Image (tube, rainbow, N blue to C red; front, side, top):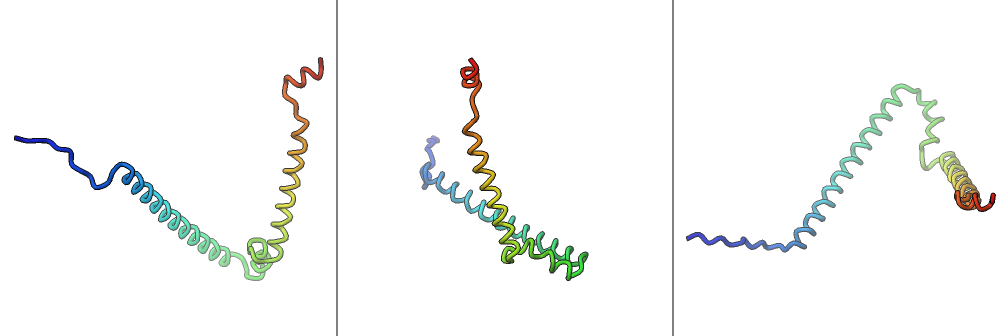
Length: 109
């Protein structure tokens, strides 16, 4: 006689969901680390190619534009941020004057 029984699992449904979430987060973390390493490797190769093609004095003159610690980079970055905040405030101020189609019809009639 064969009696079928449900095999008991040590983990209930919520435990399995929690384990799956943890596994997903660990997988995402490993993927992010691999992507970061690949980006660093690509950046290193790009710099090597750049240094092979362009003379060092020229690189020294243009390096300030991508070196985050240089004064030139900080000055340009702050001016860009200022311009963006200024244009955002202008667009918000001008959006107050926008009327809907119904409002424009009522103002005409």
